[in-house]
Length: 471
Image (cartoon, rainbow, N blue to C red; front, side, top):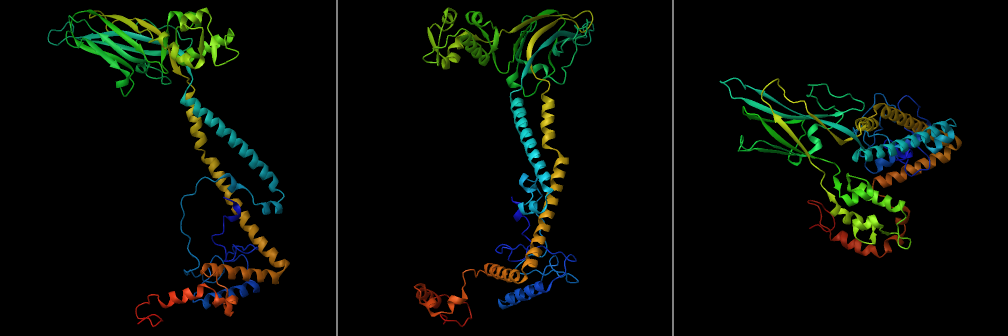
């Protein structure tokens, strides 16, 4: 919104159509001149001629004590508006006329240009960060899996013996030493997802002879609403046996194991579909197999012919044709002996698996974006600047008023009275009224006069009125 029209809500009538600005005169700042007294008297006479009354606002004229009277023309008491929003950039711009009066404002304008460039750069970086957070970059880390069991009441006759199988794990940091013997209970660092997030499905098979009912326990990531620090299975029993553990990795995005033929071409064992297609593209470019006449096709060398079975393949069909060479990743099969004697917990076996984890700086990026959006200090400075600009605009209007009056007082007063008269007619709905034309008889010989007379005579009169058309 332009600053030139921000403060017309308490202006005197006539400011909208006159070429001269009218100031907001506060009590005690400027005494009323004789010219203002003449304008006020003429304005009151015009209102009284139309049956209206007028009481000056205390903010414009300095009567003592101030009188707050509501008139049909203006509202004397301000209505509280909605909470002010963050100032826009154009609200901090100086008016052109004020810039001409204040040569020092050139430096302020240059600072505004610098601020606009900085804000634009921050906005671009913010968008880049938000895009990066939607598809966060991943790095490969080692997930160390611990499998062990505990037991209780194995040598007590009065209580039922029980055992508990536990599967936990954590991400190893770079350069971390090997685990100390017997130390198996570790929590996942807070920067990384919880242990269960790395698995799509976990299946534990118990000895069917000892546990004929529910000997297979399955957990699926798609059915779980929350992630967990690990898995455990608790059963009653006093006999040792071997438990089979099947772990299916949860890759996001999904990864596939390549067939031997495609693995021989690309040198990749497990990867995502997009990276496999990209690897084929780089293979074609490196060996210059792209068709020169039609770049949408590429020729197959002997290794690619084993994969696609064709001499020429369209690039857009590569993702579809490699589907028969992609298989689910190999599952992890573990075996743990449930021991019920010795020290508890039992078992110090651990297994290392390479997994993809989000880049650790993601939390810092989230905090950075939040700080950019919630900078109260900058908002307070912007609000203060906008307040100063409003004061400059107000004083410029006052100065222009008095400069115009000092240069040509008579012409200025005439223009002011004419402007007030025009605005009064607009306010009273008489903008189309022309008294000079109505004095001539030709005005009443126009085609619409006859229809207007018929409508006037046939109108429905008010109750108890004595006007033409009443009975």
